[in-house]
Amino acid sequence: MSKNDGKKQVIIGLIISFLLYGLLWFFYLIAGSFLKYTTPDINTWMNIVVTTFGTFFGPYAAILSTLWLQNKNKEEELDKNIEFSKNIINLFLIHEIKYNLNNVLGGKDVFYERFKNEDKPTQFGYRNIEIKSDEFDKIKYELIKYNNEDVNDIIELYFMFETLKSNKDISKFNQKQFDEIKKVYLKNVDKYLD
Image: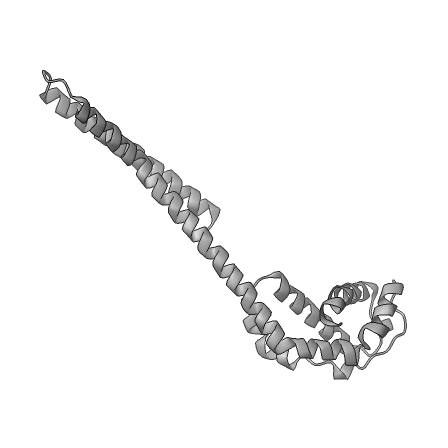
């Protein structure tokens, strides 16, 4: 439910409350006209006040509690999704990612030092045909369902792997591609390599 839907519900609840409040006073005035010569006692006034209060605030409180519960349920579902996506990454993708970073790209020693010190694509080869993405290909449609930072990082990392597959040498990439590869690599290398 969007914020606008919640606002609409609150406004509708308030309108209903005011209509019920007005209806209550209408009936009170009609009843009062039949009982002109009697003076209401304290119990009658208390009933009017309590009924008015309940009529006005009851729907409003119900709407607010419903909105609060919906928000709480969304937060719980988001937490479950984050935990589930982390489990998928750790169970299925971590070995493939480590393999690609260590064996294909030379681990933390080779690529890491080059990327830290270079701002332009220079000649630097790697084994592009050995880049693996089989596990990712099997579960990528499941991962896309969970929109969170970890999943976005994994997708970005595998896009980098796919880009690297297209050439055998870093110098073959244009500056924009090089900058994107460098950014993604440096962002993820410490996360997945010891």
